[in-house]
Image 1 (cartoon, helix red, strand yellow):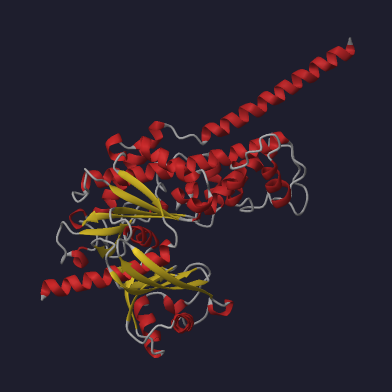
Image 2 (cartoon, rainbow, N blue to C red):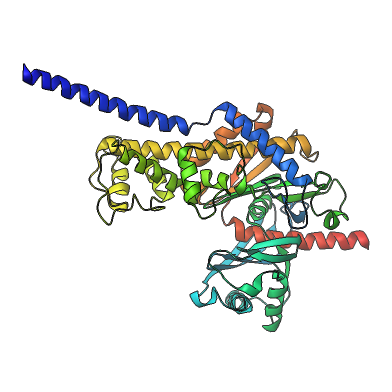
Length: 493
């Protein structure tokens, strides 16, 4: 009798434990589901922020909007028939990329020649940024020797990982250094002038004709082969969006720099949407608030923290730690080598592996991620199933939020840009590691976008994934700058 009673109690305890686990998992899953009402708030809010950012801004790009809406000063559209050889320079972290792009026309044919260089540690800080720029110029000179460039003048666009206040296509001052660089004398310097000085000193026949933004580059890299492209999106470790707008909508954007342009001129605008939602609009969970609180840029870049590659793995890790503390996950994390309790050590790439794990009987790939990559103790199949679900929750929400933000830009363009051909529509270009490596992400974004805009809009859109977008796009920006200059000469002549 006693034995039977104990078994009954054990069964009841087990059922209670299973119910507790299910309730907790269901609650977290619900947290990461975004309702139609919340998506509607996001879309309307994004459109309002776009209009506010375009209408209220000063010389420093200060605006009451969380979207900076920075003018790129790139006007017009490539048609795929332009020809010429152009150079591009990108500084991304401590990596330098120098690229030569030969545009062959014929509907967007091109050839690429690119080299990568590393910035030595001793050149990332000092009293004079000129030392760094001199090294970069040496890299450009080496590149030209390698590709056998003849001594003729080349147009170049630069894409720099520093914060630059751009006041013209080829004019901008450094306002902050990032990625560990520290040169006090850099702030306030004209970035193009710095490079020209070093190029001239080394006898390089190169003229920097444009400063190129990553999202602008993504747009134009696709547009050369697909001239209907009107939106460019970068979604990798961080995220950004650029799109075409008409000057007449830019009532607050550095009017003194745009006054020579007619109101119906189309220009690419850099939204800097990474900061969207820092005040409102986004459905943050307890895990989002925790991530933000523990970040080194608390209170800003909320949209990026909920959608981009730098943060998605960390959101999953925080969910796993919470479920471990609640006893839902059963593997141990006591070993000193265990990485699950170390911030940012559940890499976003692990999500790709867990979500794509199709061996449902063992979830072996998920086991490898947990036990071999994260160094946790032995895992059960139930543990692995929960981890796979957590990756799906976070990944699916990120794609939904990104799709909703794209929907906001699309709706704005259909309503406020008269140049949009409503009978033909336009193309959207997207670049970044998330799109290259995360198998389920792109389809989710497209599905979200399709459901959030009217059918007649959805039928007129195409979405293309772009490779080599930033460096190739910068070369296209150089071509566009040269093309714009020629058009100006023809008009004044």
